[in-house]
Length: 298
Image 1: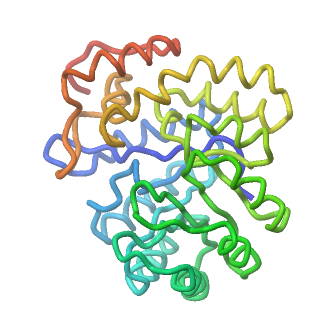
Image 2 (image 1 turned 180 degrees about the vertical axis):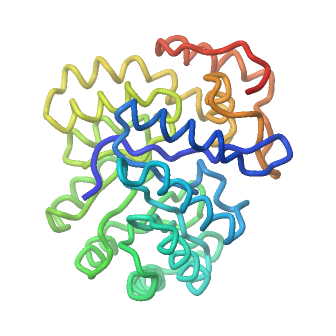
Image 3 (image 1 turned 45 degrees about the vertical axis):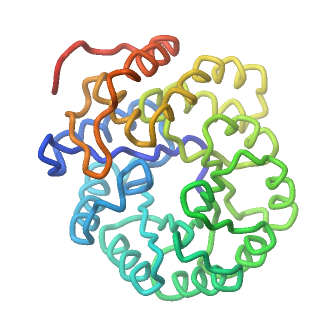
């Protein structure tokens, strides 16, 4: 089961949009030494919609080659087409991923029975354990707790990333799902309370810039050390907010760049952080005790 601090890794890119494999190695080593418990490649924060299937498979394979024997690599393979999702899942399986993170089909607005059939098909044919990913604010589609509970019994479906701030859902999910079914927060601001109430960890944006703090907070929360966990989380509270001052991953890519780990690459239709927001992100990073660089690029 996947537990603890799992980073939703940014995809490092050069200014022309090409994937920067040297920066990818820097990022992965940064997370290995910082105590991160897992890596998600090509999630929302990794700009998955802009990666073509060949790039996705190569990116996963390179990440597994660098870090896979030390940190489990999960890969995003979801789309709003079941056939395409199965093909992408097979690709990331060939790349060596341990599991597939599969977002609910966006835009289509399938009913709950359609969502259930979608996930069963991916689990049957994709070749990897499936972690479902519910993020209604982005997809216009909500995977309801009753549907999750039914799918949690299905072979090959091993977990859920729940990216909503509604913690009351967790109580229902924990009670209805098998004990070994992995429940992961997808909302940094409420992740601490999610774990204290029985969740298994977080797939985190904040961990991109503050991996040691996030790892320490998750460990404390999962071990029942609430006071320690809350003290660590206090250092990150402004980061949890600042990293969404523009749509993710725009602010966090800027933050990782200020750490000196990546260059200024991002793919349209996303764009680099607006200058009016730079002080917001920088102040939050400094409040968390992070050392930033003044270099113009790396």
